Every structure is written in C-alpha cells, then in structure tokens.
Image (cartoon, rainbow, N blue to C red; front, side):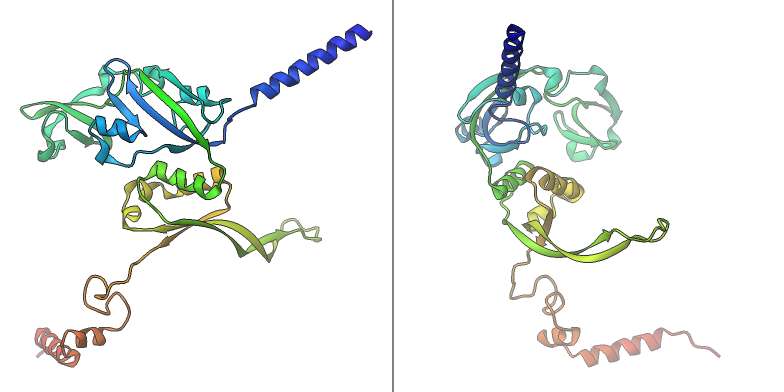
Length: 318
C-alpha cells in the first residue's frame, strides 16, 4: 500500500509540474511588443516589417511608421503558427517560423481569375496591375482585350509560404499603453488618449418582494464607477473608412482585451479666427444678422429684396 501511495504522489507531482511548465511564459491574452520581418520563402520579397532599416533598404520607409508593435496573443493579430511559437516564451526570446501558404494568405485558386466587362472598371484603372474593386470584391487587373478584362481576385500573396522572423521586445502591462498599441495596430495615426475612473449614474434592476413575476421589473438609479478610455478624435480618424464602418467592433476589442468599462471618443475642433468654413458666425456661434454685418451687408435690405421677388413671382388672380 505504501508503494502504491508513493507512486500515486509522484504521478500527481509530475502532473502538476507539467501543468506549471505548460503555463509558464507568455500566454493567450498577454500584450507583447513584437519586432518582426516577414518575407516570402520563394523570392524573398518583403511582406511586412517593424524594422526601419529594413524598410529603408526596401524603399518603403515613407509608407508608415516602423517600430515594434503591440499585439495580443490568441487574438489573431498575427499568424497562428507564430502565436504558437511565442506562447510559453519569455521577453527577449526570438525565433523564425515558416508559415505555409494555406495558413498564411491561402492557396492560389485559378477559378478566382475571372473575365469581366471593362465597363465595371474606371478608365484611370485600366492598366495591368491596377487594384480594382468589382462587385465589392478586391482584385488586380491582369489584361484588357477589347471590352473584356481579366481580373485576379486572389490575394497578391496567395500560394506563397511566408518566413516570419521575430523578437519579443517586451510585455505591456499598462492599460493606456495596451489601448494605444491596439489603436496603432488598426490605424497609423497619433491619437491623444487617456484613462479615467468616472462616477456614472445608471439604472439597475432590484429584487422585488412582490410574488407577481409578470409585472414590470423594479429599477433604481445608482452611482457606479466606470473605467473610461477617452480618445481625442481628429479629421484623420473621423474620415478613416475602417473607423467609420468598424468603430463599434474596435471599441469592443478595446473593452474586452484591455479590461476597461467603456470608450468615449471626443471630437476635437481647433480654434480658427475665421470661424471655420463659411461666413463668420455661421458655424462658430452668433446669428445671421451679426454675420452679415461682419461682411458689410444690410440684412434689412436683403429681406426687402426677397419680399419683392416673392411678390413678383406670386400668380395673380382675376
């Protein structure tokens, strides 16, 4: 009996040590700052990089900001094969992963190369290699013959294996840095952001002593604390198509992954001595008469002229 007990204890200890070993290092949900360069295996073409020197060598340094990026493990921000390699690693670790085409940008599908009418393509885009949007599908123009065009709707990197070299630069624990990192992943825009704890009044359902369950639920107004991320919007963000169509999903990611309670986007309007577009006073306060006085126009005269034109246009009755 003693031997069996010792053997059982050893198995339990081994199991616990294995579990601890499995969960050591970086895990799903962790924010990490990652430096990487991805290239195609076949012809060594650059796919993406966070290295400014590499960007300069490839002639793409003016296409954005190149610095290590913040990603959340387990959230699909990078290829799944790379996530698997990083999980369990430590800050400072580096490695290289080959991502096969099916797991990268998909296999090349010849059926996705289709012939369409050139009428569907703007005249300025009627040249080989042009990126075109047809029936809400992105494609690349191959050839034009007469009134027909061959368009490839495969991803430009479909069929390519990708070599992904990475280094784990650091782990991000600060909530504001986490939020900024996520926003930078979506948009290459510098945004002013801050986090505050606000007191907010909200309605909450209270338990009722009434046995009648069919009645309206009773509520009361309570004051609760909400951790709020404030984002100062600007024209670049406001006019960004991804933000316009996906702001709800992006805000939900911030809430779920950073662990805040809500997101408030504040519109920022810079002061302008001209009051913005249009006549002074029309957009920045004041009334129409004040605005007309500022441009040396008599509002009464305009009103009289309008009345005379209206009287002249009215049909006469006999």
